[in-house]
Image (cartoon, rainbow, N blue to C red; front, side, top):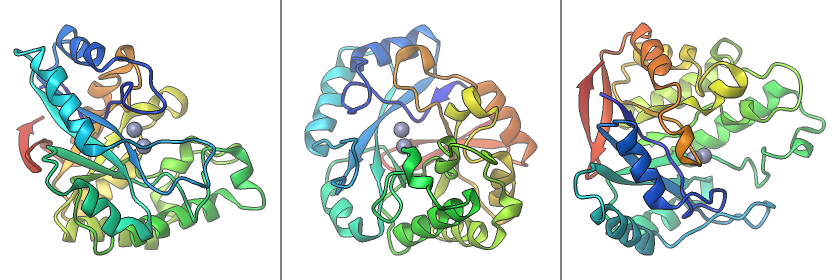
Length: 264
Ligand SMILES: [Zn+2]
Ligand SMILES: [Zn+2]
């Protein structure tokens, strides 16, 4: 089974790849299926990056483009940017849309964007990671309108210096609080392979995936976070191998918001 559950196209502010080119690439690569997951972010006034779309128009666009490839199995997803004060906003925006799969990702911490180096001024990396996890816990507590948590350990992709891998052992208390929340609410995590290119490990690292398993987690997806066709499916094999080593025997895919499991 070869799938990709995190991809972006020109429906996202940070990609120029036509949606059809991503679908075609999934066919050319022999993927069993893949999922479109463009950005939906609210309240980004504090960021120099802008990302938003109309989810109802977006899913209509997905349906139109998917209809052009009748033999492809393309799932309709979205990556929604969570923040503690946006639960009702996101719930209302997604209501009735009918997405197969929703990634909940934290891209901003306390109203600041960790993508930019000045975010880290005066903070140790551990302080940033802790603040990120606390903000993510706050954003997901009482919020159930998602399938998996996206790229846990996200700021480690951007820290300008020091230890660039966010280790579970350095943050056990807050990491466990997050993973328990995800397990107990019946959700999953993704293993995002984009950081293999720069850091040699996925986000989250396998130490988090292993702990998720120990705490009873069952739902894991794999996504490349590709913003262009040639990055789709990258490091899928390595990710699956690592996930197996963490004790998982199944990966999840999603249809109509429900997980389906396939053996790895
Ligand atoms: Zn993201
Ligand atoms: Zn993404």
